[in-house]
Amino acid sequence: MSHQTTIYVGLNDSETGVQKFGTEKYLSILKNVCRSYRVAFSVQLINGGYFHEDGHYTEENSLRLTLMNVPEQEVMEIAKDLCVFFNQESVMVSSLTTSTIFVNEKL
Image (cartoon, rainbow, N blue to C red):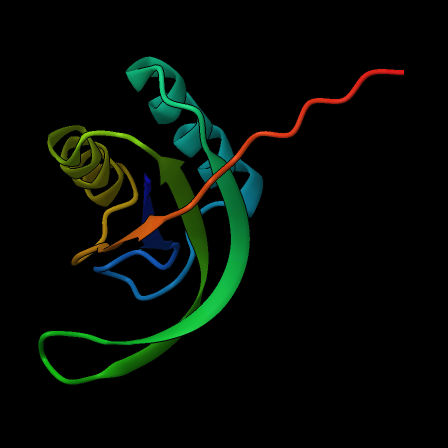
């Protein structure tokens, strides 16, 4: 069995409520974080809504980062780094056990 973890990171700044930089800048930061932790990943740009701790609602672009078989402690460190680097109130971490196979084929 494999372990899949997904980290959802909003792109709106927690203080101003707007996306301060272009999406490509955030993708670059995320890729650098994953590279520095030496983890393989996939990332998707999605859109979502979030209720802040004070109750107000916002919709924003978000990045969905998927990691496979990365230890929980390391996932939490990555999540904390992204929370700080993207100036977020919080990031969401989701995990599940999956069945994963790699298929190789040559001509």
